[in-house]
Figure 1 (tube, one colour):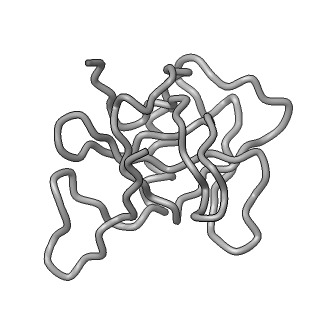
Figure 2: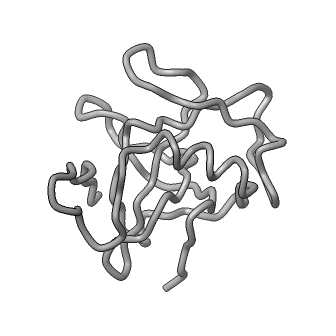
Figure 3: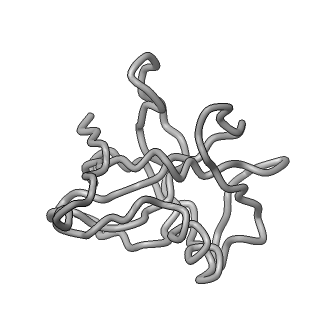
Length: 126
């Protein structure tokens, strides 16, 4: 089983909301949970109209990248937990600066669970 680290950009099967079926899309790894699971923020080609996001461009990558014609958007308010098995591939790794900016906009997440008084991120196990 492959191990993933904070800052990896992967392709994984995720749904952006409860109304949409899952599809393979880019995601940014923001942490690890229990073994075999990772915490991610999905990436969309369009900014959401009702939630915070950050632009993601090719120069945000330290290695690899996405095939994009313009900016994409990291959905920083949508933290999901997925199984490593949901990952279809690895596309690259963000620069430390880009990862720090994304991390500053993501709700506080601890690797193995919530700290007292903190909200646990949403879960997705498909």
